[in-house]
Amino acid sequence: MAVTTETQRLDAHKLRADFPVFEELINGRPVAFLDSAASAQKPRQVLDRMREFYEHEYANVHRGVYKLAERATAGYELARETAAAFVNAPSPRELIFTRSATEGLNLVAYAWGLDNLGPGDVVVASELDHHSNFVPWQYVAKRTGAEFRVIPTDAQGELHLDVLDEIDRAGNVKIVANNLVSNSLGTINPAEQLSAWAHERGAIMVVDAAQAAPHRAIDVQALGCDFLAFSSHKLCGPSGIGALWGKRELLEQMSPFNLGGHMIRQVTVEETTWGQLPYKFEAGTMPIAEAVGFAAAIDYVNGIGLDAIERHEHELVAYALDRLGDIPGLIGYGPPADRRAGIVSFNLEGIHPHDVSQILDMDNVAIRGGHHCTQPLMRRLGVAATNRASFYLYTIPDEIDRLVEGLHKVRKVLG
Ligand SMILES: Cc1ncc(COP(=O)(O)O)c(C=O)c1O
Image 1: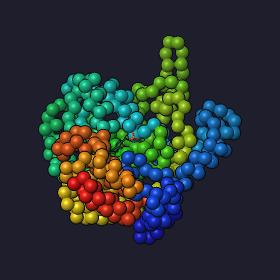
Image 2: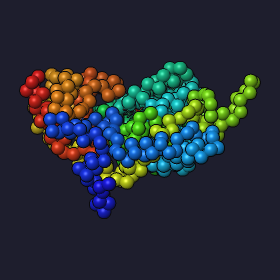
Image 3: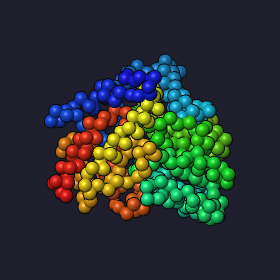
Image 4: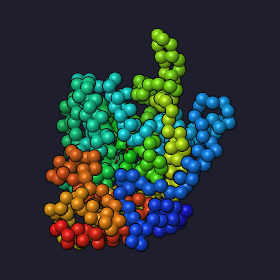
């Protein structure tokens, strides 16, 4: 692993050797993978760990008394400890494995929201939120008769917090949900401030850290939130697994979300009682090898250092914004480089983002064109879609140069 800890810098060129995907060359060049916000590539350390687990440690967890089951259970529970420590959770029992960040957010919406909301209550999300942290809140608000309010963004894609007073007057604020980093614009949101505001009103704060956890150090205690969801696949780990951290007293009070095997204490014909935390929320066979792969991914990014990753991405964003600024007809969205994570969003005047990404793909440059699951934000920006290039620990400036070259070509072909 290529890290010089004294200077908190990473060497992306060296780290790329860990990622088999960059070995495939097309016209002599590897993919310029600029879509890590959608999902990150996987290093050998994660792939090898999952293979080793399947070959030597695999069985179902918690159920068998034989050696393989014990190894599998140890691997799965160690993964829980790793994921809990990663976000500085006070206890691994507060860390629930889910299928994804989306499932974690739905878990809170259903298991907390449906039982605690009603007419006169207010549920708050923001215009910057991913549909995963927007639609569940809008839905439970409708189901319970609560009001759904949205914090708007300003022209730079930063939250307009001065509307909070007005939202406060709309009723009993019960939930504030927000992402820590916007997946469409890279905006870094003031989660601590929103947590404090929520708590002053007796509300709970739900943080969607899907786009933050892979890129910056997360501390749930410093954020002061009540729930925080993140996922493995954006963090160099396998897909199919995520994590939800929640405060123990809230999790204890909540009804289960999924019902079935393993989450029970006792089942009789008359009644079922629930198991203890975290098992109450982990019904059925969980993604076991994926949990182990998730932990390997966390070890991998921890080994590089979240501060080094964050710094690297800040430098890439500053470079990208500078280079993109030279392209005629390019409209950029989002805050200045120092207030955003490794994401740039833009449009080329008069050219649909899907056409842009298709032409870039001809030169093996992979970016995303679409609404990025943030349709309310797209409406605010007055567009149907944007192009989005997003960076990670393996991104190098050469890939941004290839993007810029490609965009000049797009303008020539379609401009
Ligand atoms: C900000 C944000 N929240 C939630 C999600 C959903 O995460 P998952 O794919 O783990 O369900 C995403 C994925 O793009 C995201 O960017």
